[in-house]
Image 1 (cartoon, rainbow, N blue to C red):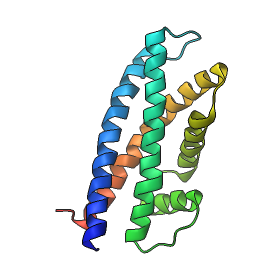
Image 2 (cartoon, rainbow, N blue to C red):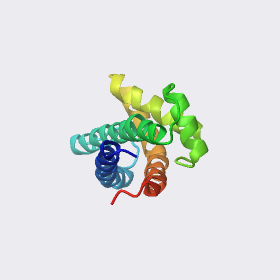
Image 3 (cartoon, helix red, strand yellow):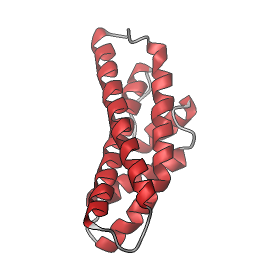
Length: 149
């Protein structure tokens, strides 16, 4: 592995770790709030931060780390779905179908403006966050083989 790739991996893993920490904070807060018909403005703000953090972490993991791991493992590029399928084969994630759904929800977060749809997104993000955080842990463990010291 080149020094440039080593530095990139080290930086991306730090970014991944930090993003996971703030997502975990938001997850716990929003899990305690729970799903409801009406949210107080502070609760809505918490959920909006939570969904933004979910989208950011999924991008870091799928778009940056999975792509970088593929490069380090000398795998061909391909589509996002290809990266997700290879991540499952490498043990970075448990189930590719869940990460395809994570990617779809991330796109919904970025492009949805209807208030009634936002509430549906909140439920999906609460359900999918443990899977996303598990993928982070698995990916960090997998990357230890590259000896980043």
